[in-house]
Image (cartoon, rainbow, N blue to C red; front, side):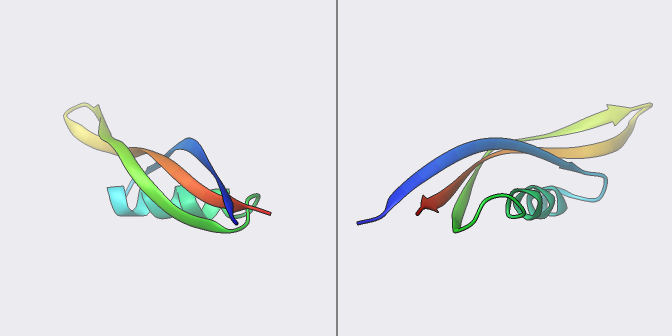
Length: 66
Protein backbone atom coordinates (compact mmCIF):
# COMPACT_ATOMS: atom_id res chain seq x y z
CA UNK A 1 0.00 0.00 0.00
CA UNK A 2 1.28 3.46 -0.91
CA UNK A 3 0.82 6.69 0.98
CA UNK A 4 0.85 9.98 -0.91
CA UNK A 5 1.30 13.54 0.30
CA UNK A 6 0.37 16.79 -1.46
CA UNK A 7 2.19 20.10 -1.09
CA UNK A 8 1.08 23.41 -2.55
CA UNK A 9 3.78 25.54 -4.14
CA UNK A 10 3.99 28.70 -6.25
CA UNK A 11 6.57 29.10 -9.01
CA UNK A 12 7.32 31.78 -11.57
CA UNK A 13 9.05 32.40 -14.88
CA UNK A 14 9.70 35.36 -17.12
CA UNK A 15 9.06 33.14 -20.19
CA UNK A 16 5.76 31.22 -19.88
CA UNK A 17 3.34 29.31 -17.66
CA UNK A 18 4.86 26.04 -18.87
CA UNK A 19 8.32 27.24 -17.87
CA UNK A 20 6.99 28.26 -14.44
CA UNK A 21 5.58 24.74 -13.97
CA UNK A 22 8.91 23.19 -14.98
CA UNK A 23 10.78 25.52 -12.60
CA UNK A 24 8.52 24.58 -9.69
CA UNK A 25 8.70 20.82 -10.29
CA UNK A 26 12.46 21.01 -10.89
CA UNK A 27 13.09 22.93 -7.67
CA UNK A 28 10.85 20.66 -5.59
CA UNK A 29 12.42 17.50 -7.03
CA UNK A 30 15.77 18.58 -5.54
CA UNK A 31 14.40 17.98 -2.03
CA UNK A 32 11.45 15.59 -2.56
CA UNK A 33 11.60 12.15 -4.18
CA UNK A 34 8.84 10.19 -5.92
CA UNK A 35 6.86 13.10 -7.38
CA UNK A 36 3.85 11.59 -9.14
CA UNK A 37 1.75 14.49 -10.42
CA UNK A 38 0.83 18.15 -10.18
CA UNK A 39 -2.51 19.92 -10.36
CA UNK A 40 -2.41 23.52 -11.55
CA UNK A 41 -4.65 25.43 -9.18
CA UNK A 42 -4.08 28.99 -10.41
CA UNK A 43 -2.29 30.91 -13.15
CA UNK A 44 -1.63 34.63 -13.11
CA UNK A 45 0.69 37.20 -14.62
CA UNK A 46 2.55 40.11 -13.08
CA UNK A 47 2.22 43.24 -15.21
CA UNK A 48 4.51 46.26 -15.00
CA UNK A 49 4.21 49.31 -17.25
CA UNK A 50 1.75 47.49 -19.49
CA UNK A 51 4.05 44.51 -20.10
CA UNK A 52 3.92 40.98 -18.71
CA UNK A 53 6.88 40.70 -16.35
CA UNK A 54 6.29 37.24 -14.88
CA UNK A 55 4.09 34.18 -15.24
CA UNK A 56 3.10 32.55 -11.93
CA UNK A 57 1.46 29.23 -11.18
CA UNK A 58 0.18 27.81 -7.95
CA UNK A 59 0.09 24.03 -8.00
CA UNK A 60 -0.50 21.05 -5.78
CA UNK A 61 2.31 18.53 -6.17
CA UNK A 62 1.69 14.93 -5.13
CA UNK A 63 4.48 12.55 -4.13
CA UNK A 64 4.70 9.05 -2.67
CA UNK A 65 5.94 8.79 0.91
CA UNK A 66 8.39 5.97 1.62
